[in-house]
Amino acid sequence: MASKPTKATLNGIADRWGGGGAIKESIQKDGFLGVPSVFLSGLGAIGEYGLSPAETLLVLQLMSHKWDARAPFPSYKRLAYRMGVSEPYARKLARSLEEKGLLKRIERVGSTNRFSLEPLFAILEEKAQASNEARLLKDEPNF
Image 1 (spheres, rainbow, N blue to C red):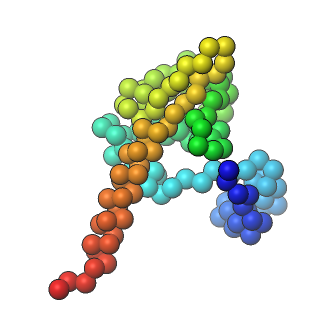
Image 2: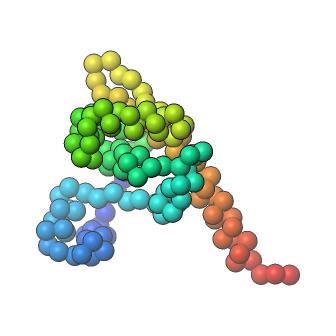
């Protein structure tokens, strides 16, 4: 289980988003989403076809429902509402991510689907490893 962020961490995040009192209160009450730069810096190069802006937003919404190692399970209705799109369009985005090999939808009878982002995480891990190795090579002295 993830530990709770410190007050200093929450204040730092709020400061980065304008620092208003209402923002700080919202972050403390509703939480925040940490996004690795490796995800944001190469959206066009993730998977074979990259991610569209709408697919990126769906991934971020799914991550906002992911509290631990388990796959999140928000309803399509909730995802659509939070994204400002129709429920069929939210389903289409999930299907597109699945077809690109970045998401696995796990059907559950009588309940909402689980959305496994493990395929995306594996690609991000490879990208991060390649980036780290390139950084190390760049920092090595020439002999």
